[in-house]
Length: 140
Image 1 (tube, rainbow, N blue to C red):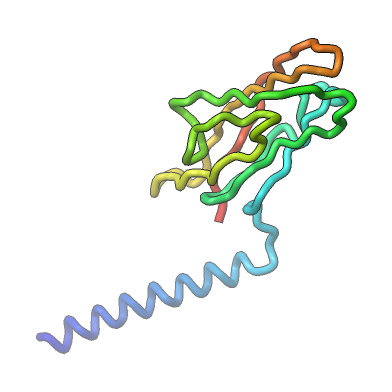
Image 2: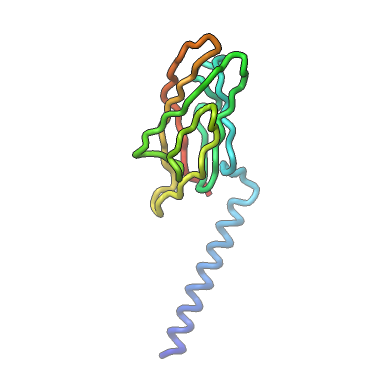
């Protein structure tokens, strides 16, 4: 009886390893959306940033960078504190432009959309909110 149980467990482990290898081979050569992202803050684009939507994976970071310092004086990113994709929900602004690491999503959440607003103050002191923008969490 122990032999049959051991054989069954060994078979299950072999199938799991085989499926993992096939999954890795299927994704071979595909571009991953994962990695650090730089989001340019600009008054030259209608939405205030480009790209407007980014994809982050667990552990990734994002930096909002002023594209032209002669046109953008200041900015702040507003994310709902109850629905923040980053581990530390600290401020993101022109003085602290880099996010903390993106959170790990739950087991059954492959992808999730987080909305944010960016408020830009131009060189003349005019403040303009740009809404909505998105951060898509997920990926390999």
